[in-house]
Amino acid sequence: MKVALYHPWIYLKSGIERSFVELLPRSRHDWLLLTHHHEPEATYPELRDARVIQLDPPVSVRRSLGPLAQAAWRIGRSRLPLEGAQSLLVSSEGLGDLVAPRSPVPVAAYCHTPLKILHDPATRAALVGGSTVRRLGIGVLGGAFEAVDRRAWRSYRHVLANSVETKARIEAAGLVPRGPVEVLYPGVDLARFPAGTGPREDFLLVAGRIMWQKDVELAIETLEALQRKGKRVRLVVAGAVDEKSRPYLADLRSRATGLDVTFETDPPDARLSVLYRTCSLLLFTARNEDFGIVPLEAMASGAPVLAVDSGGPRETVVPGVTGWLEPRDPERFADRVLEVLEGRAPFRTEQLVARAAAFGWDAFVTRVDDVMEAVAHD
Image (cartoon, rainbow, N blue to C red; front, side, top):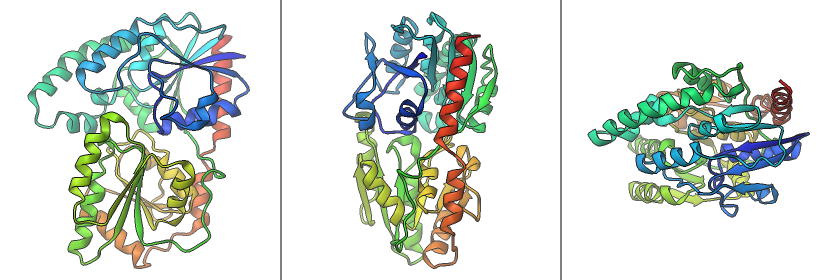
């Protein structure tokens, strides 16, 4: 069966694009990808052979209020060239919803999160900071967007949410589709991220996109707290950086002056796998993450995870078995790091891998395929 998938921008190495990488070759359907911004050289190489149509006019990837408003306008006016597709899956993180009402074929959604600057208090607070202008802008534009978005959601005949956290945001936002809302977790490829058998090194790892929402500052603050406790530790920050996040990366480099911090930008999977297999501990610092594939990749590789106690990690990290969940407190993080480095937290590789294996891509793809078929024949 021919089906289409729409995502506003395909230009990163993130969990969303990872789901496309895993979906396309495993699916029993023939997929067409539609987007308003495509940079094939910047995303995963596996997507370069996919059928991708970039729609005209393109949209900016900047997330400030002006570009977001312009992107919303252009996306909402789009008519998708579906080329015989019998159903459409919208990869929903806010703006993508706006294509749904104009679709000539039945529509389902895979929701990564409703628009975070409106529906995630942690993200909104971090964005606004002390700016009255930003607060007023979000208030004015946000109210208009919410009204349009609620109407767009009525076009969805089935919604798959990537976590219980995301489903709760959907409900809190008053977004009601025509069909059910079902939690369907993303997965991890154990072959792509195998567990190591050799000794681990004394370094901490932050992996994933390097952007302000990921709160990498917490990892740097943890190193500072460790120094105050008399322990100097190495940190590797490895992840994709797009153009709009380069000033944030520059700020992180400045903040890390005098600390043992290495930044590895845009590492390929092979390098990321080595880092997972050899680090002592993964620090997952993101603010109220929607789900978080990175902790699964780390656990699959045998690395325990220390995550902020909010959002998606609560659904994957098992405290005391595969890692810990702690408040956003550098002192608490530093104490847990010391437990690992001093051998007082002997995590077992088989338990870490078993937990990761509970989240499989085959089950994910089978359910997406079934939903797209059901929606097409509804």
